[in-house]
Length: 77
Image (cartoon, helix red, strand yellow):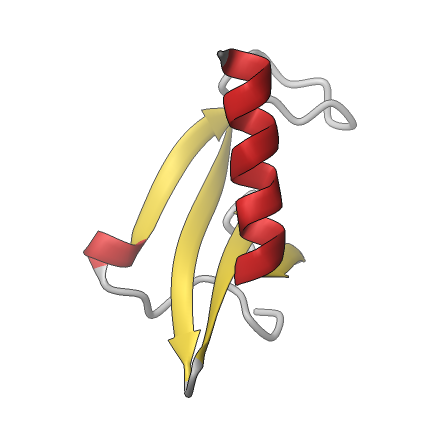
């Protein structure tokens, strides 16, 4: 598993979302995206683990996560 991949988080800090993987052309909601909140020392990171395999892990700090939340809130109303 890649550094930062989801594997040891408490259930309260981890969730799975059914998503679509465009490159693999699977059906809607076929792939799982695990989203996890990790706190390391004084920093909190949000980790996105595509396919729950640790192969392509996206890690963002709190500031980046807030930008994402703001954008999603604006897009979804």
